[in-house]
Length: 280
Image (cartoon, rainbow, N blue to C red):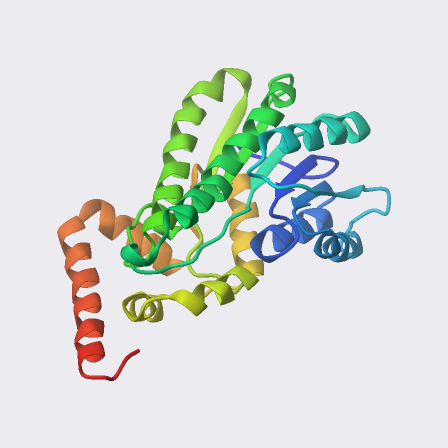
């Protein structure tokens, strides 16, 4: 589904108080959209809303924020219902909320696995279930943020990869179901992006994961947001920012043995350095 114009569109962004979500909100505000951002921390939301207001094309555009935990379906339902009652029917839903704490599989507790799934995958389920009854009335667009790790299983990201692969599967099935209502479903798969979440990831990354990351590019949130907006305008189903992400996608798809060889070699070299005491 192509978006011809964002002017006067009502756009809901989960995870909109920082990183890719905030960058996207600011760029869409500059294109005339009305923005509602959702996240957990009120102070961060207030600061983000003020930044978004500064980027508005017209002072009459509304910018609202809602503090909500995406993993609690009742709270998400209540938040969206209240917003629709106040500002009108939604046009676009963008799911950017997510978290990652990479580690060796044995070091990842069941609690971490459960929380990762609740935030990354269940959170998207909750927002879609809550907004869909309204969106079905006139059509719209849903964008779910997965990751390069949503189509490439990367060392150290077992719980995260499970959630991000799940997002792609959910989106593909949902796309087929919602066509009859004039609702499009796209997936954003960013590579490593310089966000507050990425800084947290780096604190727990195993050495092998760091070695893999070093071989890939690092994009800024504004770059990813620009790719996302262009992808929405052109109606892309898979929006993959940057050259490295696209290369990984196509090599993994068409030459899986080659891709696996490259990944295994990178991991092996890192493990050799660990044994030699060159890596922690």
